[in-house]
Image (cartoon, rainbow, N blue to C red):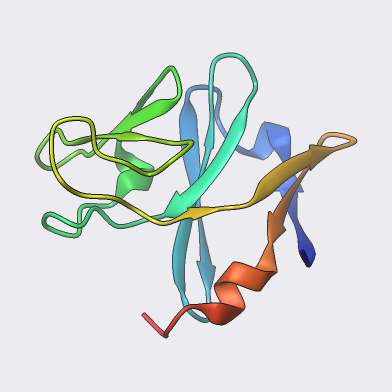
Length: 109
C-alpha cells in the first residue's frame, strides 16, 4: 500500500466527517465517538448524496438525502442492495494516512 498523510485526526470532527478532494473524486473521512477513522467515497449510490454531510453513528453513516445507512467497514447499505467504496486508512502518531493505491486505480469522477 502507498500511504498519504492527509491530516491530523483532530481535523476530523468527533462523530463527524471531513471531505477531501482528489483528482479522481471526493473521499469522506469519518471519525467515530471511539476515535476510529474510516474513509469512503463521498457519494451515496442512490442520488449522489454527500455522505460527508451525513450522520455518523457507531461505525455507520446515514445519507443526508434519503436516510440510507452504510457500514463504514464494508460500505454495505443496511436495508438496500447497494454499496459504497471504502478506502484503506490508518492512524499513525495522531495523523490520518490514506491508501493512495486504490485512488490511483479509480476511474476519474
